[in-house]
Amino acid sequence: MNSWVTCTHGSEGSWPIVFSANPDKLQMSEFDDAQGMQTALQPLLPGVEVESIVGWDWSNDPLALDT
Image 1: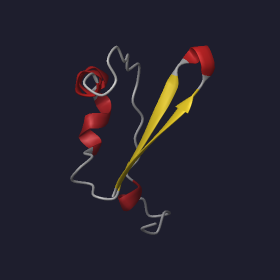
Image 2: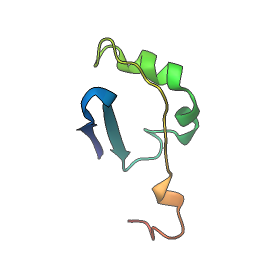
Image 3: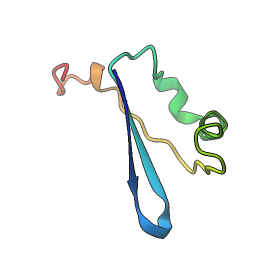
């Protein structure tokens, strides 16, 4: 399962939030490549400007207990 939600913050822009139940589909190593993510999003969001990326591997977080 993959999920995408966008939170709009007025003139400050928007935050797309993505969840993936399959860690192979959303590699944590991709979260340090803002330019690469911007390039990948261009077909879906023409003109998008990615300023930063934040990610967390919940499936390996000991406090999340696999939820």
